Length: 64
Image (cartoon, rainbow, N blue to C red):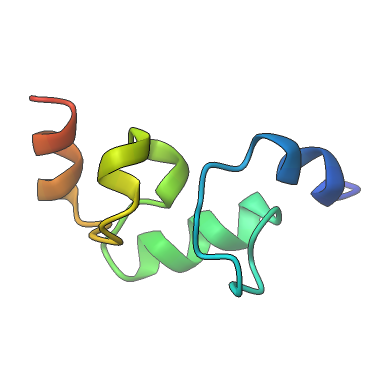
């Protein structure tokens, strides 16, 4: 499968601009799940900016 990095970057919500995985969603998801986290695109903008990618932060951000 061809990666559509440029298209992914158009809608990527991650503010960590120096990340090598930015726009390469499959690598980003794999990286975060291996660390028991979720990628920034799963969070609303204000919560994403905290860089807390934990499942607890996700639940708090979405009030689950």
